[in-house]
Amino acid sequence: MHAPTKASGGGGSTRSPTKASGGDASTRQAVEVAAQAVDLGGHPARLVPSRAAGHAAAQAVDLGGHPARLVPSRAAGHAAAQAVDLGGHPALLVRPANATALLVLAHGAGAGMRHAFMEQLAHALADEGIATARWEFPFMAAGKKRVDSPEVAERAVRDAVTAAAGIARRAKLRLFAGGKSFGGRMTSRAHAAEPLPVKGLVFFGFPLHPAKRPAVERAAHLSGAMGPMLFLQGTRDDLADLGLLRPIVKRIRATLHVLEGADHGMARHIRELATTTRAWIDRIS
Image (cartoon, rainbow, N blue to C red):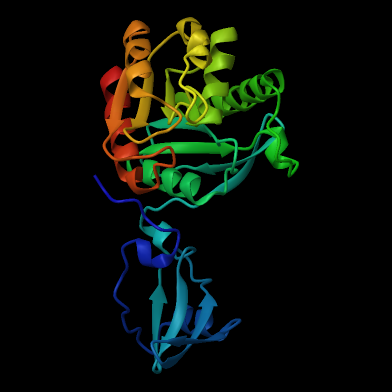
């Protein structure tokens, strides 16, 4: 398995600069167009988009008088996020070339789809061959702090998942849905009310109860949510007492993976979240 990669060029594999002969017309043309002065480790250089045939992703640079090509990390297999519309809701699609599944990923109550956790999780999942469509609830898209009512949130989930089903069908990907905290809970509520067209649900920290107020009412609907479910929970999660969650997971015949030392944020456990999700998808497929 691979570690989560950053969006910057330093996160992917690179190619060593190679000299191009003076007779290479395509290279000379690329260097001559829209040159931008840059500094490479204290050395002056020129950076321009490449127009050479067959090298759409490459950029031509001049290294001390020697033409070379700079290849962005996504050309080495790291997918970039693409803005899409999911049933009227803004979303970001990350689809690696080797994807075999698509996960519709809803955010939590306090941060949207562009939060660092969501971005890092999407790229970690991409490293595992899982495409993601992370999207925003109406309240977050409108810049509001108060979350949507369950009815509004569940309808938004259904809109987003239904739209994502079209993407999955065209790309021949297995479709899953879930999310972080509030997003996962609303996804399961929508699924329990009327089954979503998914192979299973994934919860990145199911919020079983408010902090310091242990209860199980938020899980009442789960018995009506059909199909495989994966709960990824931390031992230090104040919003999910494992003593209360374990029997619920057992009763609905779901899978529980416990992250040792993780709190509700799970920021230091992103790789484990991704690899565990990959293994679970493979196991139930």
